[in-house]
Image (cartoon, rainbow, N blue to C red; front, side, top):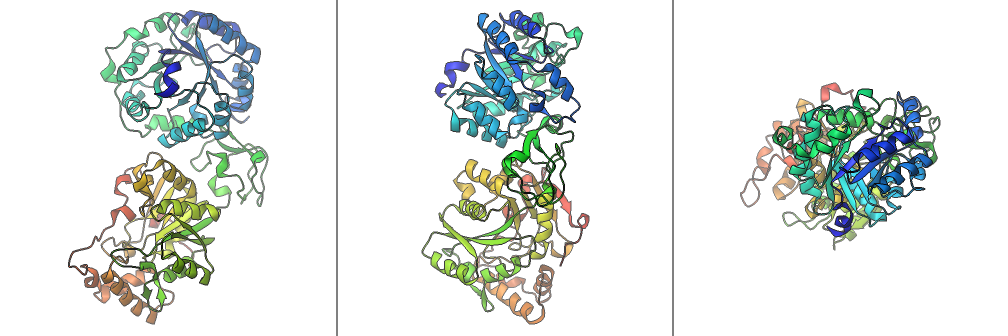
Length: 607
């Protein structure tokens, strides 16, 4: 376990002082002395009110009263060191960090509300001290990103701590099976602990930490207070000194505490995330047309925390404001402009049908038909070809130059990487993606899908149950970056969104149910073999004679009325091709978590 064991192996129990001291230095020191014989370390929370929240937040004045000065922190840490205790500091912002680094602190903890505060995470990491990362009320992807950010700047030991405060947290929300899952996933590289937050006045509060150790936790973190009857700050889950001493003896109720082993957050945990998560808020009033700079925004807890707020400052820097956003208000996805790029992965080396994108349908190649349809989409700002670095690349480069298209050339085996690079070079926020062997897209719906992706703050939005070959996915470039960084080689194939759909707990996926007239997953309109090519040529011959412009409903009418389905019912070798391509537009694995929007609930798109 590398150098993690050199530090964390000395720690079994961390006493969480939190804010039970009420901002009183002498009380905090007394708390340290009372738990020194039963704990290996203490943890204190270091913040200013401005680190935590906007002034409109209901607890802003309370945060001011609870904040500890640098001198207070020194006295508390000195008392702990005299009692042979390590001391960790929960750091909530730059001002608190500046205070604590002037002391002899032993280590840090990144609170769950700051797991997308990457600037703070990296500043903490540069102090090069052991650091714990909160794993409660956050997604697995946020955990991975926080650890990745720390490992870029420090070689110090790192650990995870699962648990969340719900004032108090119910026993059924302890979810030790999720702790077990995190241990299975991360224990080979990091020490994993558990933070108990059940009612401190119950027997469960004394036994639950022992259950967590039985599940596999390397250490536990437990709140403490001098007198619960005073009902001071954070008393809800705090143990008095005697109860703190005896908590390790309780192991008989372990089975009762074993909740879900899913990595999905429970409803209570989601509520906790909503109530505690910081988001991007403005430092001044922003007007329509303003370009957001780093000085314009910070991460804070807002008065209200809607789903459409941004969690990462990097996601808004450089964006153009569409409407006035008052000072200390969250920046929502609907407040800013999004740049949308259609990215088309191009290659010719198919064993089933060579040169599919450049095969002629009528007088133009399939790729030309796609470009023509995509250029009718108002939301698309640019079309970029993501060309495979193979002998056929010259043909696609020539095509791009002829059609005044941007392009990039990349690894043949890394389709996802090419899509990401195409989006990055064009400055995209959202990527519209389809495959280049599809001449008949449901292009007339793409504007609406983009609107829903923005309105729902989605990582992936897609129209479901369409004919195979007519889909277009709308994906955030941020999600594609994460899929490329954290996925495996199989996720970098032409199944570009497979990592996203396999991890619905970390990505927001929106599925739009199309009108019944085009809800035809039984139909193949993609070109994967010569029989498919024959079909789309027959369809084009009929459409081009009568309909300009044409739409998917018209295509399907010809398909049905002319009885053309028999053309590609079989491949040339007599075998039956796949009809319903679930990996493209059904997303069966993510159905339970997908936000589904019926076409009838949407406002009509502009023709």
